[in-house]
Length: 169
Image (tube, rainbow, N blue to C red; front, side, top):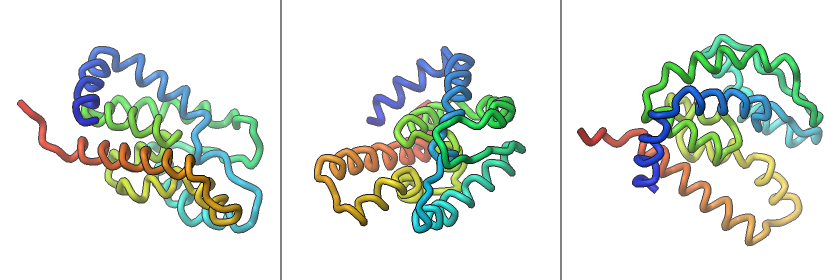
């Protein structure tokens, strides 16, 4: 995957503005904005997602509105500009890692925390799959879902390694 990330880095460098715009649009449906309704799940979300949301709001000087429904909160559109400024501050390497992580985790906020070192790959994975892991505890684990999660976990770990490896120049 490191080779794939290096190739992606070249493409992202050529198309930064377009990639950033896609990520801003993607942020409207960020995983961390859609909370569950069950008490136990909400407590876990508060414990794990709450600090990441607070960190992102402070870092980006933005307010991200959460919901328990399926409708995208309109207020989050104003945070898009702040996210754009944050993304523009990233190097091509960081933006590549950010993009790959955001797609794997369905969250630009988790990707930001990973890229900036607020959380590590394990914490990012646990946060990204908090609801699935909670459901697996209650209903039992599905082998296919478990394999998919492990593949994604490995990819998040690879993204973290890519971020920390020295540039080849």
